[in-house]
Image (cartoon, rainbow over all chains, first blue to last red; front, side, top):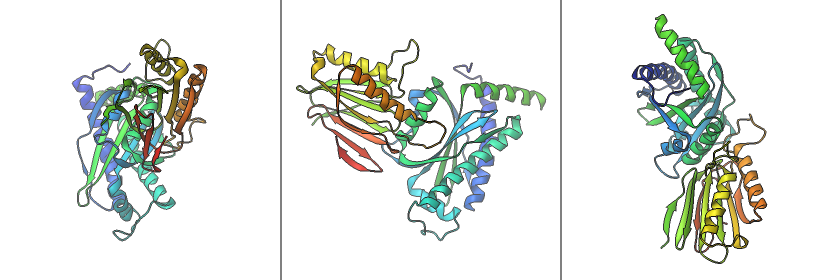
Length: 207
Length: 156
């Protein structure tokens, strides 16, 4: 069972794990955009499933969200959130277009967004696999451009079918010149948490 | 002006008089409104999952939440014969191709089933699809304004 509170040591270890994952994810995003990406310190919170939606700070804010399930030795969910007003400039960079060229979200643009999500999450998982030896892969990515509460609410519903609470590992990345901010949430299943903690313990002992 | 009452995930609110019951950004959740068709009394349920788990009877679930909603209306002297319902939400926001039936679809199915068992007629709805909705239900005139990014605004 995951305890209500982590020890400081466990929390530090989780933050370190998230740092390693998001560092690799940011490198991947940086290569995709051809821009430098700044990372903030990951935040880790155990919250009841009905409170996940409180992550939405503004009501009815529209965002683009890519959602993936993660399977393998770690089972989890990943949600990547891009602010809607930055999607077009992000796609200009990724698709090597002139600035301002992307004006609509056609099929190509939508697949590009999904692919960005897939690449970021895969990079994250690869780094974790190297660090603690747990291998996992993401599912086919799904995309929604909609109200942020509706997105969080839907993901909470899926988690609520299994668990009463969720561990939110939040990683924020920002491209500073155009202020493209990307939030990556990794939400491991309860079972996966136990495996991660055990693997972290074993890794730290082996260092 | 009607006072706005926010109904968050897993909550049930029943109001009498000049109120607006509001649920923001509904994705796969189901929002079920039941009201007295003659007097301004209404309740809104914002449920997350279709069926209650063993021993848990809460407003997080469509089946137990609808039971609670109807009980609360009856406690306010509403006759069950005068209750009508409107249902909202139950979208499939993400097509992950992993499940035959999404949580949204199952939520709406359970809402229909539970209301049918109680003999309550569904007189309006805006359900399904792949987009989120904000629902503002006016307790006084029993109309809901449904707002979505994908489809704009409509009155149910």
